[in-house]
Image (cartoon, rainbow, N blue to C red; front, side, top):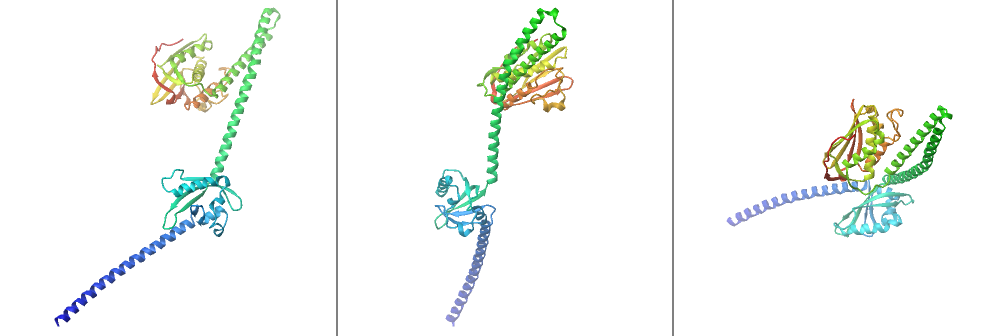
Length: 417
């Protein structure tokens, strides 16, 4: 009996162990079933993402043979799936880019770290012959079988057409600019010679009339004076046009320039314009700049000339050239106590042939500030003007840091008259 009891006891224990194993196996089977379902769902989601993606998906082997392609890919290549699978992708690329495609795929199949761009722009051909532009990106798919490349095709036709249009317009604009420069050079050259002749003959005629003054009526004298002034104005306009033309030409090499000396030189050159007036010029200790001398001379000449002109109604004209530093930026200012300008007209200040004051009161060609803006913008700097209520105006010129030589000088700041 004891042996039978022991056997029964052992049998019951084995049955219990078997039941536990069965429960564990069922749990493992359930986990496996859930895993298989998740994998199936993921596979379906991937298939849907592949099939209905908003870009073209093409899977090909190392030779470029198409193995899979999605709906958009079929639309892009212009054929049904059955007509595309098993054909070479290169057949849908323009002939002169097929070698480039082959090199690109070769780099992709070499795997991560291979030299070359991550994407390629191609000129494509649909099966019907229609051309379009695509950007191609590749991902290497590794598995048990031979590796494959999954290509993403994005239609960039609209972008490329915009780029080609922009390039065409840029070319046209450059061509027009060159034509305008040629026209301006021709006009200024053709005007110079007859203008000098008019001035010369007018001076000779004036001298002749003075020698027979008793025989000449005052109307003739007045008309001759007007003719002489018109010739002078034409000469000034021609000079301004020449300066404006030169401002658009390649600049001289940048060299260090002492602005203190330049300001005083320009002020001395303006002596005919300020003759008979009391004009006081002061300036801060100014830096030396690494700059094109001719261009900077033009800028200061136009700004100081304007300051002298628009302080004409003042008994004593005060002009001050200041400087401020902000990091590597140099900010020059030309301040005067002249008549100023209407702040509402500020946008017109730097336009070609624009005048904010009557030509009778302040003669000019309307080119000075336009020339200044052209030069300063060529430096990649900025220029602007501000009206100071009841005190005149101030013009600011921001000079880029690249032009700023680190050397500063501090000469005597005594006023010039």
